[in-house]
Amino acid sequence: MQWFHRTVELLRQHFDKIRLRRPLPKNEIAALQLKYGAAADALSYFYSQTNGLYIGIRDYDLGRIFSFEESQKLASLFSHMDSGFYMFPVRGDGCGDYDCLVVGGTVAEGSVVFVDHEVAQGPAYLLAGSFASYFQIWADYLTTKYHANGDIDQRYVSSKLDAWPWLEKPQRQHPWPFDEEWLKVNDEKAAQLLDDPSIRAWLIRQNDLP
Image (cartoon, rainbow, N blue to C red):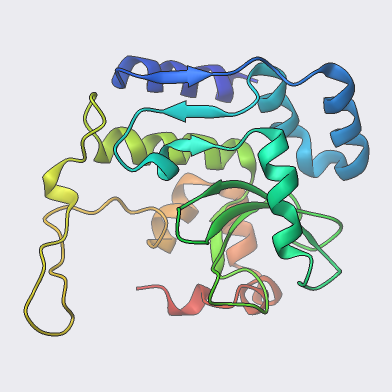
């Protein structure tokens, strides 16, 4: 599972503060795999190395992967959704939105999607084809936008305007998660999913991305 160790090393080399936690006990990892099968393989490996992860950036929520216990508690938020799939939240944005691993037999099982609190019918758009891909892309996003001390690079900050659209486009933008073509190039599984019309129909706002 080089994807995990390579990504953690990248984060350690870039940031002044990164905190890993004691791994999840083996019996709980086994139960997770038994419940969700292959869809949770990468996430199970993550928990076998660290039960959650924290990066010291100013935007606290964006720099944190949930512990297993946190994810379990938050999962009840998505119980109202279609019973054909199950959402396992792995990260939040502090505004009621979550990045979730899809498990439970749906066609996009094993992928990571963005669940918007304003979209009740289902996931809004695709973030990655797997948790392993998600973890690596998330790390690239953080190391691109934030300095070692956790401050955001001001070139990625939008200036306020006095009229609509109220925010000026920043000098620089990371392509994830809104640049679909970039995601396809950097995540083969995501490309396969996004080329499937039934998946695009299931992702409520995929076709509306800027």
